Length: 382
Image 1 (cartoon, rainbow, N blue to C red):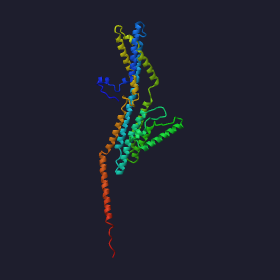
Image 2: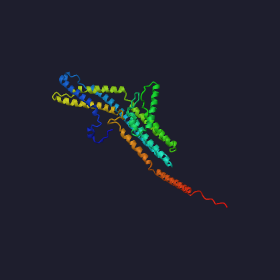
Image 3: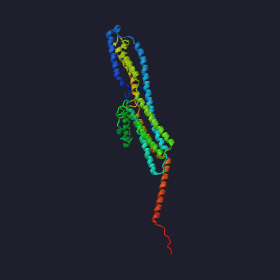
């Protein structure tokens, strides 16, 4: 996503990174070429024999076309803003889930149990990030036509990064194999079916959270709250898939493209007559070419903006900062987990454990001294 200073107008105009000019310059060049050809035609035919001298028809069509183009751009921006909102839900749910697990879990008195709890919380942190990454990978590689096979390697993108263990990957692939077999039974195309991979990772995460409740480290109310956050994750994933899998309606896009081509590439023809100057012909060439390129930039540029932001989860310059948001979740979950050992309650429990260990050591030492002294002597009989 391109960030900029809205107060520096000159720098905004001159900046090429993320500019739509890079996408529409061929259309602008073609429109300028047609404008130059129209000027030559006007010079050759003269005022009385020129083919088109009135721009009223183009003016009417241009007004309608501008409305359709702006309407399409508004729809695309709505999808862009909705996508940003769903990414925000992912970040918020990851933070809240980790905060809830860290804050509302009981601190065990036994040190071995504390180590088991710390390991479980670390697995939850890992799977939260794994779920976030899997959702982003799923929408970036979305394909709405079976067989569903996101072209990303689970070993490369999830296992090697440390988000998923090998045994968990094997379980996921086995579950995906079962889905593939079920598809064949219903007569659907076979082959890989990895479209539901985030749901399987969400299930692994739910099992880890439930283990906190099963061991008595978490209450049922907190468990319900954690499950709500995981459900929000899944809901955001489905909403993001809706954005990726629902393109702009084809008849509308087709009609807009046809009218835009007709208007932009025929508008320079009557414009050559309007700006023609018999005394200074070069003025007509310059003005007509400039206005033709400007009109092409306006209409094709507005349409190109809509096309680029229609799916905001890609890697284009103006797409959403998905990578930065994933890194933000990684840092926040790691910080929240680290904060657990810095709380006063954890320090007090650590002090309590040390007292228990000291008392246990004292009892063991006393028992050792007692056994070292031998059995008590009994008085001899007379």
